[in-house]
Image 1: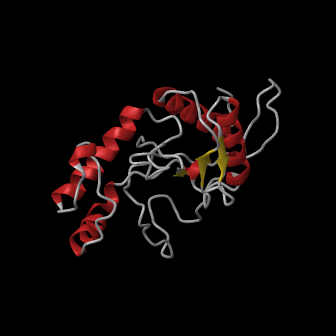
Image 2: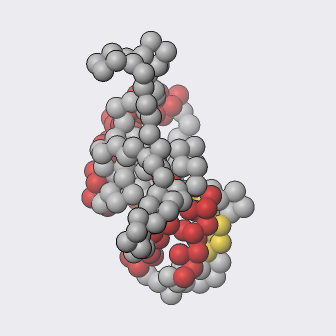
Length: 199
């Protein structure tokens, strides 16, 4: 079985494995120096604008992500579920097929009908963005962090190997961990590897 990213909902996350809060982070994890107290500081990327306060730059086009909820690495499962429920409900209300046997918020990923595509477009603004640290395009240290994440999973008993492009992982043997323990390990290792803070 192969897992993609780190959020999970039908493991369409890797997906909504990790997957929620509305607070925007201003930077990505990275390597850094010591703060003198033995902890590692991480570089923070920031955006600067030459536009006067209160005025938008003429060249700045609105992003397709504007207004979408932003998940954090430390978002609770309740937050993640809350945002997923909002998105799934929107899809359902717009006619997207669901898989009620798997739960009320289970989306039928095989539905490629025009109605489903229209629903996805209409609800795109409700789909929560994953934490910036988990986004390869926003985290310049993503590959290093991902390798640390997979090492952590193995150290804590999950027995996995990373896919060659670090886009997910697959089991590498039988784990003795329960589903609840695996979930805790995944969350702990995500925080440890991508935030640089040992759990």
